[in-house]
Length: 120
Image (cartoon, rainbow, N blue to C red; front, side, top):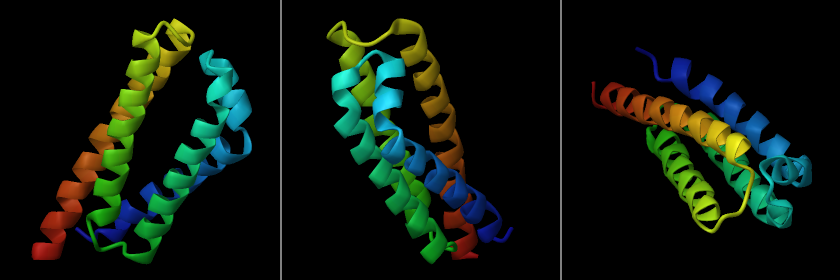
């Protein structure tokens, strides 16, 4: 399998999600019930854009997919920490955690596939 078939869609997803977080970080934070976290949401959006650019620049490398997976783990840890502190709205945070968890599975699968393709 050509790794570009995985890397390019993942890159576009990352760029779109990152742009949303950067340009609508305040709305995203407000929906989650953590309005003071808007700067953090924007920062995480910049990370998404950077990983998307990495995937576009080196589509045959697994590094971009693994960078996204690491970012997903950070996102889940941040959401979990906020909930443990009693911050945030429960349902939107659970939905976001489920979304990030699904993205994590996709990113790990992409990392494995691109890594195997690079070895072949």
